[in-house]
Image (cartoon, helix red, strand yellow):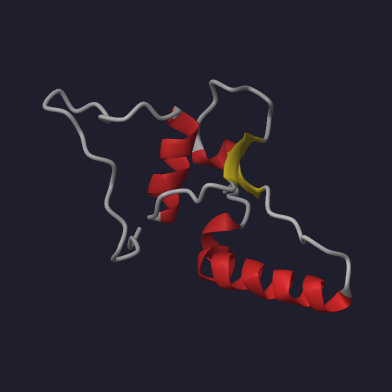
Length: 99
């Protein structure tokens, strides 16, 4: 993984623990993407098992939605989504566990 140059992994304590309380699945996704999650992002467990935090079982979801229904509003929203996620597209594709 080549992380985003602006990404700093969450600071660790002397014992090697993340200093700030953060759910493990969110930390796994942050490390995979090489950046912190945005406020409107959450991580979904594909198989529904919240203890299965393998990256193959995690999907990044976004809560953002267009504010209006006008076509121009939807176009602006689509451009915002592309600007936010296009650089991460290869990391967001499903990860195959089959060889």
